[in-house]
Amino acid sequence: MKKEVEAILFSSSEPISIMEIARILRVKVEDVEKAVDEIIAEYESRDTAIEVIRLGENILMRVKPAYQHLVLSKEKDLDRSTLRTLAIIAVNQPIELSKLVKIRGNRCYEHVKRLEELGLIKAEKKGKTKVLTTTEGFIRYFGLKAKSVEEVKEILRSKIERL
Image (tube, rainbow, N blue to C red; front, side, top):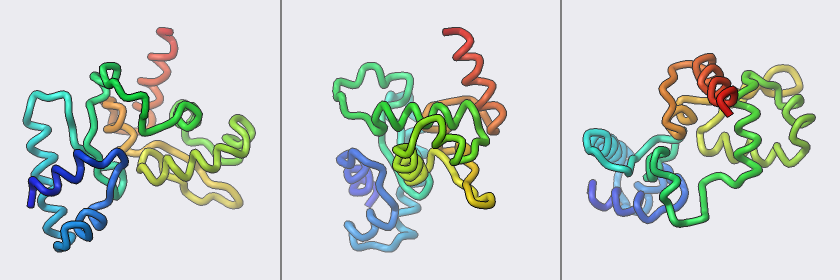
């Protein structure tokens, strides 16, 4: 089954849930979970440009960030506008959704929903608004060597200062 799961991940251009993979293969979620863990471990042990990562509840096979510039396809997981919204969240986190809307406009609601679905940010209710922060999925997605929100902010600010 591991090869079947790998084939599904390889052919999916979007992150896919373990439940969806189990439905496609008509097997138990636990069996898919085990296969995914084994695949992730195998890819981590290889010296390769490909990785399998968890993004919230979803799984994604992709080219590692260090090799993204070599990808020939123009289609990316995040469009430029959503990526800009994510950058503002990452640099200013924790940031209230209401403040983000003032910076990015109403379209950012759509971006926040997509980023939450991908497991790159989390939104916690605070009064009438939500507070947005990046997640471990964000750290893995961008290949950062950080363990906390503060470390993410430091890394990003140092990169910005070098520009």
